[in-house]
Image (cartoon, rainbow, N blue to C red):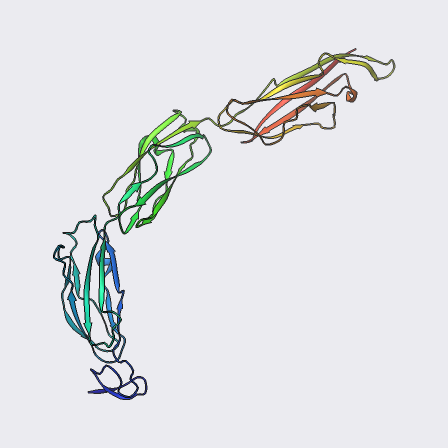
Length: 362
């Protein structure tokens, strides 16, 4: 039986390797993939097997031979050593796997020699490689100390895990000890490839109800998909109350004497017992108290000034105190009795007021 060549429509026989007219290669074998790598824990049914395709027009004759290794179990077998493919046809490689007898902690390689009637074949053999199963190593030192975390704030850190085996190490749902379970969230679903290091994010965001004990310590046990490993790491954290604004005193009194010109409100010989006084801003909580604003509520009453003006965004650590001096400008006093408020605003919408009173007797 003869057919026509695709190049110039010249006739050829089914087993011809080249077109006698133009020299076109009539048999062309494609193997995909030409290197087959999988891991001990992989689902072989899902992965499937390589495929051979005859991309030419003449019949392809294939003979398969398994390269033997006496020191290894027979984990790869050929079920059909010879077959033929017409032009344009494909066939999955007739092989089977049995990995039960293999050591999951080492690698294995085998070759299948592919002999065919293709001239100058591109795929003289097919390499099969079984990589050792994934294996984890926690690089982060245990215990992982997250330090102090303020109630209502969020703190993040990472746990570093290396895949010292093969394949893909996939982080599943971790087991967190009850002492930490309500405090900590762990990132899941991270894939760590052979030889690589993955960073698993750990986040803590404590609420007010968590402050039963200042210190917490517990274990995080990792689970990985398809491998029987549960490495663990100890985690420590200390909880701290949120920052709390306090001012002392809340009222400042300026007293003094003056003389008043008869028939007028004009004051002279004005003398104060104290020209300046101080008040303190304190952080009586934990964390950092950030002073957002210090302002006089009635700035048009310009008889008050801050001698030591505290800049906005000043940070007060736990138990830290800052003293502010309030000074009276005598030449700006218009009344024998007056008052004004100073508003102090801190983070978390905390507000305190300082009342400043002036009282002059004549």
